[in-house]
Length: 332
Ligand code: AMP
Ligand code: TRP
Image: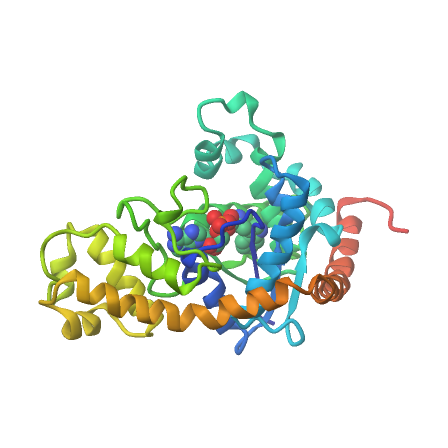
């Protein structure tokens, strides 16, 4: 059986990179797979979160997924901390994974920065919890961005070592699915940096909550170069800002970059930016409006998450029970 699992952290400032690089791809997978989508709040607290903001961000992320087209009736949508199997399996995996494996994780190095001694133990063990998320459901396919490929490899290593150590064929080795034409949406202010929730400048990103006027202003002020648009993809080499805007346009219109350049090649950025604004507003406005409507209804969101947690639990518990038997624990 083929099962998709993916997660995103409720850490605020949801932006176009999250939509094009993650959520939109998840929506598409619903037609071919059984899908489990998780708001990974346990991962979020590996760095400090203000409790009230965390609560609000969990609901906002769930709302954005539903507004984007995740169907919580047909598939499973829940938040991680409501299903205890994640934390329990993560502990077992902490005892399977080797310190040397985790020392190689580039995301830890980036997030911990210079003051590694002061990073939380949870931030270090983050990939082991991620492996638990996926393997608690024996998921076979995991849609993620490029930046998560290394964590997926670690997940496979943990699955293999668990199977070897206990002489079982229990966990599958999940495959990453790196999807979509826009796996890396770049900052509007600097084409060499990823669009990111943590960029100090709000002008660097298109937020999923921005209204049409804000979107228009951000795109108008986006960094470009003085040359007109090229007519072929090769002409985008060495022009990261141009490449980014064209890629966003292509992704949102389900076209490829060459087609966009056939249409807009030779024109000035001012005209293209207007066309891009129209497309961004057309695609994002319905989602933004639905998000605002859902966000005003905490009762509905909380009920969706509670129901999702129950269904997730029903899948994960029997798997965890078997894991405990394999490890040598006594089950109740
Ligand atoms: P994060 O907000 O970093 O937790 O990421 C949530 C999801 O969005 C992950 O699947 C990321 O790979 C994806 N993502 C984040 N930023 C970008 C970006 N600038 N371009 C494409 N995908 C992104
Ligand atoms: N680490 C992922 C990110 O930052 C989020 C995540 C947590 C995840 N658990 C997962 C993604 C399991 C896929 C599968 O984007």
